[in-house]
Image (cartoon, rainbow, N blue to C red):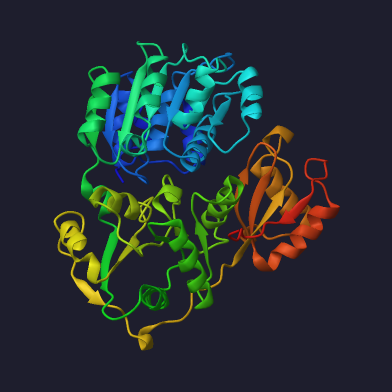
Length: 465
């Protein structure tokens, strides 16, 4: 965190007021470095991982060049995964409140193409999407990019690793040569630098110092010894009792086994992997973010772009393939100025990989034995929150304040019992204290929000097929 306020930037008072409402008062290091350059129209090549505030930085920059109400997008953001695209779009919508009638559309696989086509036909100002789906609409003539003033390539290293280079190249060439191009990546391999050379003009290179991104992460290595991984993991969770954690495995089948074994051991967990339906993946991530779910077992592919401000721990059940993968994983914790814990399980076959990591991000971290059974503090605390879905959203003119008003005034729910609220196009989700949920459901069932009645129901945690 820096001491530099957003008020030092050339932003109008409505923008500053909105940032204050979002509790954005002081710029993060990447924002302080990048925003003055981006608002001045320069291309920027930024090295920054998740949790550094880069989304708000490029979001403010691209909105500064938007003229809402056009039939073609004025900004395009490309990123590697559906989950990250949804998070970026939500953040841009929040930042865009001072800019009336700004339309932000996500274009990602796993969603309805016909719905995309209808939305594009109505006009859009900002497109956030994955390269495959954006390219599909581009080649079919449904998406025109000749009015794009700002192109953003986020998590560029991951997009290249996932084989999107040809799609990104085709899409970028369909945008005006005069555009501003903002490229962000957690690492700077030669392929990312080549991408910058191809698509950017005199880009200003900036980077967040390692201390800004990782100093708040406490790293631990546990030597398994004779223990099997599932038993060791249960002991470690019982010892640390993190409020929330993502446990990384390398294969979807392993995720299923680990989640089942943890649940049987008294640590309720849910798997997240690419074999799940997109609706179930979205639901799992929503429940993790709002505190309804504490433990998630995930593959790297499923958790790319996972953006949770208050994730207490990351656990490497299995080691990532390289140091860059390790940095991406542990970057999910210690965000927004908070501290975090990164735990790595090390078995006999992991010694070479651990030695390589010790020459990089694990430098100086010694191995410890797995805590004995007597050191366990207990089982993972069950979540204190549940989630209610309300079948109404932005297209029904619902806002978070409308939902809070209905719950507190009409139903009598204490404001302290209301957690995160997410309003989507046709549905809204509200996290509530578990004890208050039955009364909230009953009250919403017989009451109204903005003089309309909306069906509501308790969201169940998805299970594997």
